[in-house]
Length: 587
Image (cartoon, rainbow, N blue to C red; front, side, top):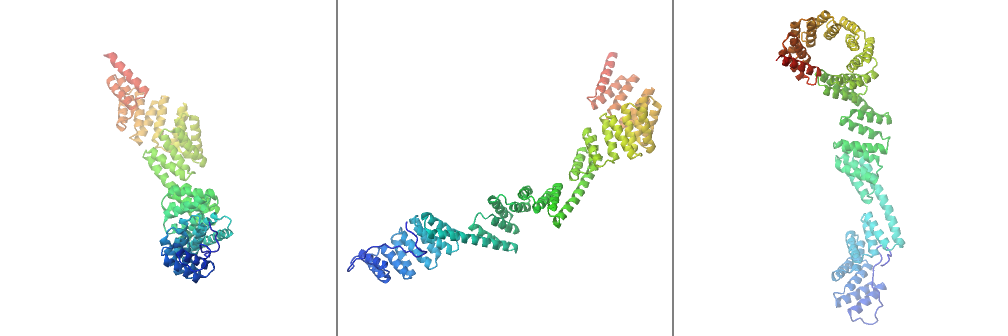
């Protein structure tokens, strides 16, 4: 291994003592030329090497050393010509390639110089001087990183060479300075909207320092400004691979993904950004906008409010908060109205879904809880209904309708004391609530307190003389007390108000039957069935009445019809069995 002397200064020669006297052979002329070269008699050396070449045109070493003499005289074209002839004769002459590289370097042709140094190290991989000078050539071309690579290789071959150590240190410092300069230029271009120039500058910085996370992040931003979101995402990804704590790159990647409509990935990135920096108001704001685009307005508002709490004077953040609040309120009201429509049309599952969505966007929506409770009741989910009514009352303790509805739910569960308590509270809030009186009457009936029940139904009818249900319920209570005329009177009043009240016909039929007027009873049951052909109880009652008239066959037909409508009804099963037995015994 030869040592490096100075940059571009050491030309290798073969040394040998000169021969005295007249030279007669190519070798003798060659040795004479070497002697002249060592004594810096370059013209004489050229003459001696020329004599050797004339005698032996394939004398590669003579061409190489004559080229060296030409180089010493500054005649680089002649030198290059001789080195070229040398490698034509001997393609493995690494020294000739190396020397020609030096000549090309002196002429400023660094590309050719690099090519020759490369051939030299291919022939002799241990040639530290060739690596060193190729590194210098790369440096002069501005390729500092390649220059540093060659300088480091040379130093690895000569670890104690201070000149190489100094070159490595100098190139490292220069690369760092150049990289930072190009990075700062890129930042300046980015701020001024010169995105192509910014990308070029950041790319050069990254070529010098592939671990420059900030350069990847800012190049990503330049790509994003150009609408090249895939390229932007690629750069942001590289930035966070290098620096997993780079919250800004996560936030920027989230923006690019949001632009592509990749909302879930964007939310994931914004979440990483706020994990890195819990005070990054912009990341919260950005995540809030994406939640809103996904339709999750409540989560969007939560993020927007967080962003505003971090930057209370930020008008953009404040604007998003206001916009989402309005949108949430509007959406909640729209879904609430849809829920009411579903409830009225008997679409209880759809109603529950709509009220639930209204509650999701506005958790303090007491009316939504109350009406969802009503839908649960109509589905037979009484416990869920009571839960919703209770929530509605916590939000609005003065909601008499919620008390009344919860009372009905308690009554359906057979919890009549709780029902009466709720109805009573509703009446304290609104003494004119006829429905509450009527409902409390049902609870009193359930407890067996028929007189109080009649009093409440009567109060309800004072408030609303056209309350069909109150007439029907009071009539039924009279029926239970055995006051058949009053019962018939109430059922008749109900039918005058609503001739389609099938329950009133059915109940009046029972009263007529108990009075012994079986024809009137059958007539009323028949009317009830014309109004509601699936009224199982009316079939059963008419069947019993036919049997009482002695027409067991008709009675059995009606009883079987009732059972077909409610196959699990044990009472209907018993009636059918009884009538079949009676008919069988007659036969």
